[in-house]
Amino acid sequence: MTDAHNARPGRTLPATSRRLLTATLLAAAFATTAHAASQGPGWDDPANWPQYHRSYNAWRFSPLDQINKANVKNLHVAWIHQPGSITHGLQATPIVIDGVMYSIAADNNVFALDAATGKVLWRYTAKLAPASKEVFYQSASRGVTVGRGKVFIGSLDGRFIALDQKTGKELWSTQLTDMKKEFGALFSSPPQLAGDVLFGGTTGGDQPVVGKIFAVNADTGQRVWTFEIPRDDPKSWPADSRTRGGGSAWLPGTYDPTTDTIYIGTSNAAPDFNRDDRMGDNLYTATLLALEPKTGKVKWHRQEVPNDTWDFDSAYEALLVPDGKGGSSLVHLNKNGFVYVMDKDSGAIRNVWQYTENMNWSKGVDTKTGLPIEPNYPETGKQKLHCPNLLGARSWNHGAYNPQTKLWYSSGMEVCNTVTSDKQAPLVAMSQLSLGLSEITLVDPPGKKADGWIGAFDPLTGKPAWKVRFDLPPLSAVLATGGGLVFSGDMHGKLFALDADSGKELWSFNAGSGARGGPISYSVGGKQYVVIPTGLGSHAPGFLTGAFPEIRNLPGGAALIAFTVD
Image (cartoon, rainbow, N blue to C red; front, side, top):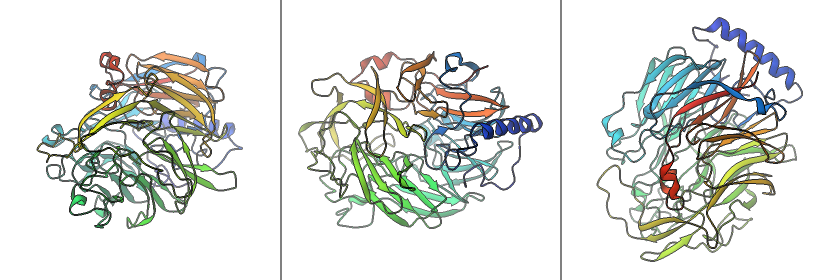
C-alpha cells in the first residue's frame, strides 16, 4: 500500500525516539500476531492512523482488537488534551504515526502529541490574515495530513502550509485564494497527498465564486494545477452564471494508488436555492470527480444532482468496498438522501439506494442513469417543504466500514426544511452567503418528530442490519474496529461503543460537550487506544435549532480524550 505514511522518504522520529521506537516495535508485533490472516488495504499498518480515513479506501476501520466486546466495559480515560480554544469545538480527525499524534484545533493551531501520554511535543500557530475573521466559515479546521517528513494543513486564509514533522517549523506556505475577491474562500479541510502532489478544495459552494480544486508540489509548495469546477460551457451555465456558480470541493478527497486516481466531490451550485439564472445542468457542481493527480484532468465524473437547487452537495467520502466478485465498488452518499454505488474505474451506476427515511425532493433515482426522477424544485416566491434538509440526510461526519461484518456504519438525520426561493441580491460582505432565498426553516418531517440515528447497512444494497435512535442527530464521525465495536458520540456529549453486530450499547462516557470530529484507534507499546475529539461546534448545530431548539442550551468545549483498557 502506498499512503501518506509510507510515501515519505526515510522515517525519522521525534526527540522521544528511543522510547517511541521500542513502543512502535512492540505495537507492530502485537498487531501482526493478531491479524496475520488479514492483509491488504484497510488491514495493513494497524498500529497507526496514517491518513484522514486511515486507509485510502475510506473505511475508517482499525483492525486492532485488544479492546473488544468482552472488555470495552473497562475502558477508561488514559489522557486528555485541551488545545485552549473552544471555538467551533474539535472537528478534526487526528493522525497517528509511530507513537506521535498530529491534530489541529481552532484557528489553525497544530499540535504534535505523545500518543501514549498526551504530552505536547510541539505546537504551531498559524499567523492568519485579518480577513480570516471576516468570513462565514472561520476558525474551524478538520484535520492535518502527514507524509514526506511534513505535516500539511489548509489554512483559514487560503493557503497550503507545510511544517517539519519533527519540529513543527514552517517549511513553506503557498497562497492559493484571493479571499477578498473570492468572498473568503478558505481551506476548512486538510489537503491530501497523491504521491508528491498535495491537493484540496476550498469553501465557497455558498458564495458567488468559481469554485476550485488546487494542487501543489508537496515538497516545494509550487503550484501544479488548478481545476475550475463550474465547467466553461454556456449550455451548462447560461450567460455569466458560471462566474458565480460556486461548487467548491470543501471536504477531503481520497487517492487510490492502485489506479493513480483522485476521488473528490463538489458542492452545490450558487445561489443555492434559486436557479432562475442558471437553467442548465451546472456541471461540475454536485458531482463526484475522478481526476488524474499529475494533471488534474477528469478521468470520469458522476453528477448526482444536475441543476442542484436544494444544497445537495456531493462532497462526502468515497468508499471502495469489496463487491463480492474480487473487485471493488465505489459507494458514495449524497446529501440528497441517496447512496450511489458505482464502478470505481468508470463511474457507471451499479445500484442506487435510499438512505433517508423521509424523502420528497424527488420521486427516486433512476438506477440505470443515476438521475433524479421528477425532482421537486424550489420556486421563486413560493414556500415549499423539502426532505431531507439543507444539511443533508447526514452531515459531513463520516461513516465507517467493517470488512469483517461487511457492514457500513453511518449516522442520519430525519429533518426537513421549508424554503422560499428568491432572487439573490449582490453580496457586499465576505461573511454573506449566496443562498437565493427569503426564508428557510428546519422543521419536523410530516406527521413525525425530527430525530437522528446511527445505522448499519450493507453498503452495496442498502439492506439495514440495525438502527439506534437519538433525540438529536449525531454529528460525530464513526469508527469501526476489529474488536467488533462501533464508536461515536452524540450532541449531548455522550461517547459510546456499540456492538457492531447488533447495535447494543456496551460502553458510554459523559464528555461534557458534544462530539463533532473523527474518532480513531491506534496502538503504542502494545496497548490499544481509542481517541475521540469532543466539543460541539460547526455551523450545523446552529441550523438545526429550527427543529431542535434545545441545542441552544448545549455547552461548547474542545478536548481530545484518549481511552484504553488495562
